[in-house]
Structures are given as C-alpha cells and as structure tokens.
Length: 294
Image (cartoon, rainbow, N blue to C red; front, side, top):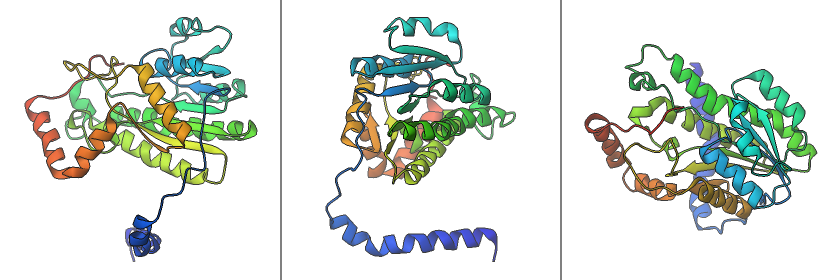
C-alpha cells in the first residue's frame, strides 16, 4: 500500500467515530467554554505593533488594563511613538518574526508574558505575478509569505508557551483572515499561507487543550488600514477590531469572527461554487489590490 493510501486510511479511521455520532452531536447542547481570557492585568507581546491592526491591539490592551505590552517591530525606529502611548507600560522590542535570533532574544527578555498576539504578516510581492503560482518567476516570494504568516507565528507560539505556562496561563491569538477560507487569486500566496496558519492554530489548540491557554483563530474582515483594498471605503477601525477580538476571547471563543468576517463565512457556506466563481471573475475583469504594500 502506498504511503498516501495509508495516510488516507488513517484519516478515515480517525473520522469514523465522529461521523457515526454526528447526528447525536448536532442535537446535543454545546458545552460552555472552559477557557476565557481577559487582558486586564495580563502581559502581552504584539508582533507588528507599530501601525494598523497591531497598533490597535496595543492601544486597546492599554485601555483594557494590561499590566505591560511588549510592542515589536522589524525597525525599532518605528517604536518610539508607540512607547509614548504609555512609557510606563509599553516596552519596545526589535523583532523581525523571521529572524530566529531575535525570536530567542524576545523570549529571554519578555519573561512575564501571558498573551501572544501573532499579528505581523506579509501580503506578498509588490509585483502581482509574483504573488501567484503559475505566473511567478519562482516560488521564492511565496515561500517568504508562508514563512512570515505561518511558520514564524508557529515558532513564536512554540517558544513562548513555556513562558505563558510558567506565568499561570493565558492566551495566544493568531490573526488570520477571511482569506483563510478561500483563495484570492490576486494574492494566492497570502491565502495559501493563512489557510496553513489556520490549521497550525488548530494544531496548537489541540495540544494545549488540557493546559490553561486559550488559543484563538482570529478571522479578520474589513479593517481600515494601509492593507485595505484600494478604491474601497469602509471597514472598522483597528481599535474597534481589537475590542471585538478581546470581547470574543473573554467569552472563550476559539474561532473569532471580527470586522464582518462572519458575513463572508455565511456567504461562502450558502453557495461555495458561486462564491469562488465571483472571485475568479473579479480576478480577470477588475483585479483586487491593496492600498500600500509593506
């Protein structure tokens, strides 16, 4: 039997008990969440915190009573303005999430962390063709997108989990996207990375199920930032987005639908084929782009 067939057989065997009980499970009352995470009194590390969604998290963490916030950025010159929000509570850290030495240095310095917010992300090349598969000159940029958006958050989470547990528990919030659920053909590598990050988060949640750490997948919709679609208005503010995320995690939600992403999820579920065809039509007739690449 081929290795692929063995893996398929294992997957089916694992799913069989669930499939047999699905009708009963659908009728059963869902258990109340066992883990709830409040930021009040906590210590958080936010990646990519010098602007946009990350800066919104820093501001709302301070507003909600976090004891300390480690604000990180690739370029430390971008952090003084963030520290000025509250010099007594905001600690700047230089952190390129793809830099292994800087990740280790962050763990060594931020020994009181109870919250990790993996927000830093890379949308892909400024050159549209390089963000795709067929048209790319190579997959090097796609690999960088995957490194930044999936593997580096996995590494940061893995490195900080012992710290969080040593400090009595806390939370990990991985900032994903509605594009985790479907492919944006204009940003194929981004969708690919966020879908992978969603599964990475599911794996972390399973491994931490018996530990006092809430692991949340944050599916973000329309937030008004430099990464918003060009020519489109609307979207909530980064601060409001952060409030929505923290409200959901305080309830114990592990799948967090923020900034209108629940409507997108419902639209996909209603007719997945029509939704996909709509994205493909737009790709050919009026390709999506964002306001400003990193």
